[in-house]
Length: 370
Image (cartoon, rainbow, N blue to C red; front, side, top):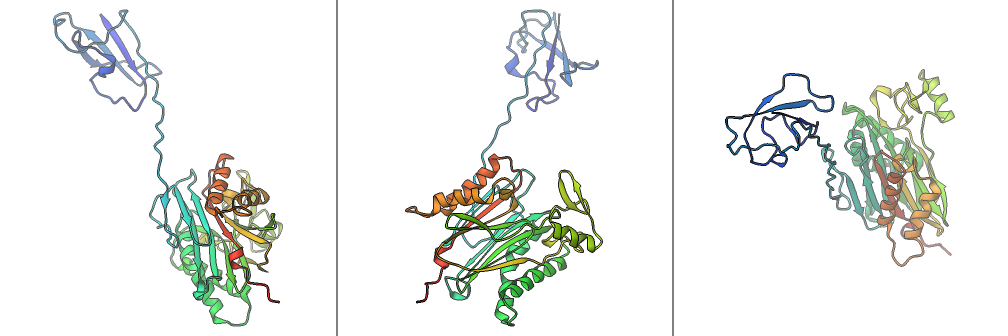
């Protein structure tokens, strides 16, 4: 009496001649042979089981069936989600380029950082934080770097941007702090291009010294400040859709077109400034735009973040979330604010890496001279 068993296409099955014990009980012997005819549409693997009359007393396993022929089907098992513990990186340490991490959690003395990997592969975001420049606790450098085409450019910028900017500041050429930052960005870009590595990185940095806040960006990382609870964008994203950026690119012989729902340079890159991007260097410049302002008592905190946040959360929303946890409370929970913003963006559908840094500003505000 033939019994046909069709097994579904599931990773729990392999092309073996043995039947799973979960389908069988030891009542009679079966000769098992691969069926030479095409299997049923729902199953790429078919077996025909022939019941042997001569060895019916053997104790080999057999499938019990209420009828002479039955099709047993099994659905693909549910995917098992295995939680991955976040990587806790001590303050001041960087993420190594070769590491595969899902989360980075940083709680520094005067800042906090939370990075969450997106769904596109390895994390390409990096950060930089140095408090106590030149031995002064009220001088600091912070940066967020969003890599594309790999993490080499963001890794390089996170390790070298602060050094290159401060080298220019120490030269004291009298050209002003904005020019020192500009030269620092250009030097970082030139050094990275010598590495002959691929990819690029958007950058947003904040240099705090002598009670001044010097904010710069190249790309679509953004810096937002809370001034008395009102969001104040200190940078403007560099995208090909910006009128001035589009005109600059076209004057240099490039073009900007709308591709896959985004304005892109040469049909490729969706940002118009940054470090690296060797193949598009003629149009993707590393020159930053810089804003300088005095830190006043109503300057509450800074938010530096990659576009993984800003594509889903607007400036005022971000300020409201952070302010609820950091201003007018008994404890300043900047890290919880970073994490809450990242998860808010993720729940709204962001698939990109999300990096958020929050810097409370009262510590860096110099006393008012009478």
